[in-house]
Length: 637
Image (cartoon, rainbow, N blue to C red; front, side, top):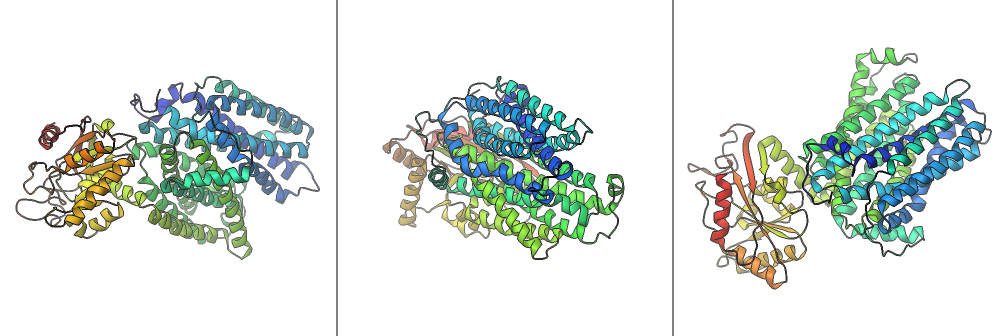
């Protein structure tokens, strides 16, 4: 199915019945499970079962983790190029063939108890994951539509964390089997690799997006080039940094679960495993909720919500753990029987749930906004940044613990740092904050329903023409569109407290009557032309001002001037007629007996409003009265 085709299924779970998604999902699921089964079984083996003089148990987990992450720094740039140059399905099958070969060598290492061989396989499995990373996220936007992208990413994110959890649990259980543990792990690793390779055979072809690309084998210069590619689009680059920060944040908690369980919660190994289970379930739940909360669009308004939740519950985790009394090490049953521990688990679950809400829209945004020919290389740059941020996370955590911080204090510091970093990112990229405001307004101030949103273009320039009912019209249009919109608005609206600041943040274009301020008038049309030349969405309210009686006013001729300029620039720009319904008489609209924003609950709370989107009209020869008639028809539906 082409990425621009209409959505034919009710929700993200239905993708698991479709060939374009299901084989890919189970391929990546088996790979993530195998990675973690192998790593955890190997860690347990060298920590508890083997005596290796040159690899102390306390260092085993650190060494194995470092060896696994090193290839992401060395080979991500090359992996991104290969993914852009070759058919992605071909790349996936090559990676799965490599996994089978590595697991055969690892099987021999497990049976013989050969630690150097298993360390080599750890590095090679890192190479395997490095090659698969760009394919994993570049494949989805090639086979899913914009309306499916958030749900598809949510499924993959959920599947990855479930696979990590199951792999860790299986690895720990299998390696501990008396007498047959090592051979059972060996067999399980090989079987999982074979299953993944078998399922990969059913993935449909995903053609190369840049087959003429010349590979640069120098990882340093190519990494720098990839980062420069991402920097050309500030929203994409800042999203890369935002995702990398999420990995920094998550790594702090995941790395400290064993110590937190033992020293603070006074629990045994089963309690540490329970914390991992709770964290994984939270991430999976948050990832799956993204499609529902975003109404099946790429909704980056969820990102500030996720950041707020991450900080709130990280900080509360500190307070929940601070007052726990000292006790002997307890098992799972004793741990869950104490009410105070349920607050700790709730904090962990909600912290990770909001991390899922934070990360999935960012991944989807990167996939949607990156040029298809460079998408895999930008994702490769993301993987490099992720690795660097995770290394920085380990260094920071180690420094804080060495300085005498307790584990809960490290969590508190991380929660406060998250608030600062997230706030900085949202100030750098106001689109996140604007979309959050629009998301809140369309769900918690009004019950907002959009009809005909399939007519909203997912790419290319277009003019959106809508009736003007209230001071919040632009915010509601923002909530309806998966893409940023540049608004042309009456200059007087910028004088309204809060809303004026919001519209300036949105880079809205002020326009004044030509007789009143010819310079502002001319500058507005010049800026509108630049928006359309850049392939973006331009929205205007052709009535020229907010209605004073709830009726559709005559349309002014400014839209004709905009369309004529676009045609002179060689652009064939469609016009999307739109109609806001049932908004007259609400708090943000005027009423016949008075002004706007004077009686907050004059129509109650969460009253229903709507937006009807019509089919595109050709901009050539379009007259204002013709457009007004179409908007009036939409108002009547």
